[in-house]
Length: 95
Image (cartoon, rainbow, N blue to C red; front, side):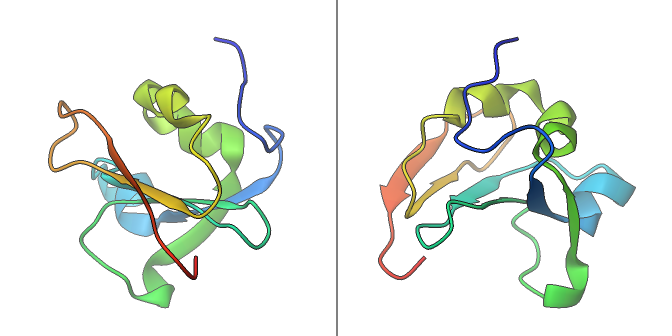
């Protein structure tokens, strides 16, 4: 699949341990406006201790549907309730 994210495959991204270790689905994606970094979250925790760093490629490999969010503008959050739901995107001030 073509890589269309604004960050290269080897750039660091945030992801929750619950996604990587426990297999939770990614239900929230944050594209930060200050540095254009990305976070891939399970939606069950916001504790910094539950976050780990992986490459963008590793994060996207967890769920190929994330390719649909490659054009998510910085400063936006995409979320869904279930892995089979469509992504809902919204601009959020301050991220």
